[in-house]
Length: 255
Image (cartoon, rainbow, N blue to C red; front, side, top):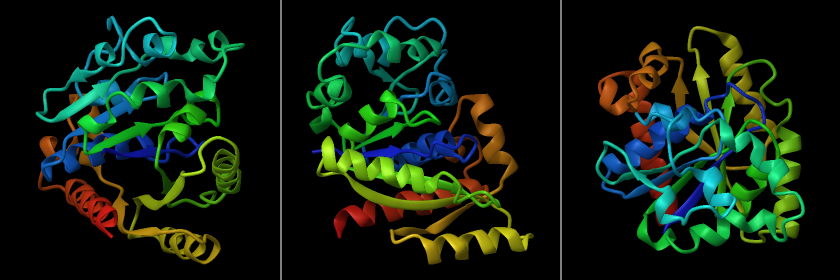
């Protein structure tokens, strides 16, 4: 049975999409079969994996509205064993269109139940807001992985996210657990990055991954080429970091 990880933080620009793309690709590199789900209407995970997002016949939007089947909404990427459920701007309207639909918090979960045994990992890239799309991701997931940018306001909004996770656990998905926190955009040249890491460690009672993702130009360039970092520049520090994170994620499963 596939392990389902939602990557969530309602703050934008913290490295959710970068983590979704590169963790997925590095899990595949370690011999896993992975489905990546793009739950963000911006569709950056879709384009970052080399898929032209604007002319797709079936996306997660059509799936959630019942206009296609789960298998019709999944694409094979150019990377063997890495599959994608794509998204585009149409998804922005899904929230309004789902008003009044019964059990709308479970639409994705009910669909994923059909295919979860086909994959070792399912990685869900959540939108940067705590809306019905994020709730769907959390009712589907086993765990939530939270990327935190090493910046002054890192903890801002985190308590709100933790509260949302607790509410989902209490009312919608009692099996949901906190996967943990991964630090992103770490700049070793600044004291601030170090202070943020120490601050989060002292304030959060949760698993914190040892791997810290650095600020890295190659990591920033890779999406514009439609490639994950391990294929764009496999020797970069960004690629090495995501390989280490994938190793940690796999080892955590085996504990």
